[in-house]
Length: 634
Image (cartoon, rainbow, N blue to C red; front, side, top):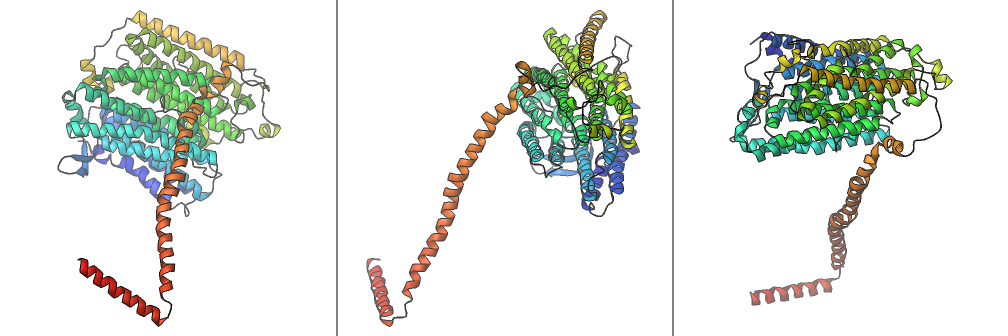
């Protein structure tokens, strides 16, 4: 084993140390030191992750999981605290630590106005977030994955509600936490099911003995795991927490949407690929839910005016595409899109943060416009990210999106057609966002215009790096139609998906068909792009409100209101009933009744202590009589 593999425990440990130092020393550390510790620990993790990746590229792969100690060791089951480093985990390690580091650097400038202790606390939470995601990815069994899974859920709550003095932000944090707990219950039940059937939760042992599971077991386990993925990766019906997660600082949004948390569900299914391949019913369900989520979220994004809400629904939609890929067996395509999406979505959120920073907190794109001439770096990097997410060649999103659409076509032309419809909407709403923000005339206040400026280097440098990655990141996945053997990522990940590929018939597609599908999707997306650019580049602010179908989309299909009506309010009424009847009148009534009875009895018994000798003699006589009567009958 290479020496670098003996150091992989440092990858999650370093951010954990950053969390402890910044968290415990938050009242003593300066802002500069807190930022250096927070960013530096993640950077060191990235360096080690990069060295590990290079070893894997050279063919040096650990033969088995690296064992540190027994996490659970009882008669019936043994679960080790083990790390597994392979091609799949190494890709995610680079995404988490690389993009995570850029977000940390960006944060040093973005929240610079916070109090020193709050500044250090923020970086402590960011470090804990990265640690939890690294643990999730590196774990060699479902139990260690679940620990990291719960950790990212906790950190999302802490960071979404970071500005805890705002009640609405606290509500958004609780919403994210509770909805994820629903999904997590499914994940936990699936792990129990696996252990009850196979006696282990270790990946290697589970996947090697998958043939011992019945079709019912496989379908049940994979459906429960997918419920967990629905919560973590924001799929119907557990997606509504993610748009509300915008309550946290913008770098937090970038971390959640690009480098951590929402990609956890994709990783879990990709890691469990053989289970899903052998459960076709679940796989079909995953594809349908993913496609439905992609389309629903895209329609909502068409009419949103909060710059972060547009990007949030965009993330939900893109995650839907990743699940579509998983559902049609295109595991490499899903991971590829996770990677490219991490680049351009982190860039979009950080670019939005740069805009919000310049606009003194304004997030409504109707009050922006004309920022191109004030913020040249933010503008050009944001434009490149929009081109990437719209799937314009040769940007990264083009290669990963079209790989998913091509895989969907081999399963069903209807899936492909619906996927193209989503891509058209993506191009439209992203360039509506771009045009209303950066083109035309400025529509804000004079005070806002007076303060417009480009962001500091700590913000613009991460933007530039992510822009470069958004442009060239897709070159690792050039399809066969362009270059023989050009899909380097597919070749790299092949060992991870070997079991699934061995039992899945690969549908061949002619180059002519592939060119045709690419041409149609790109042309359609380009038409939507041009239409949005033309329509909104000279947008004029009006007082008119949405009506008809546009109002439905602006109100997000009223899904939140529906959930509030059929779930939240009935649960609150039930809770109120239990509180008033069961808890206050029942439990409290019993406890307080005991106290009142003792109190009343004490007051009555004290009357016997009158000080009159005659009464005491009478009581003695009565006592003797009672004693004799009892003795007589016994």
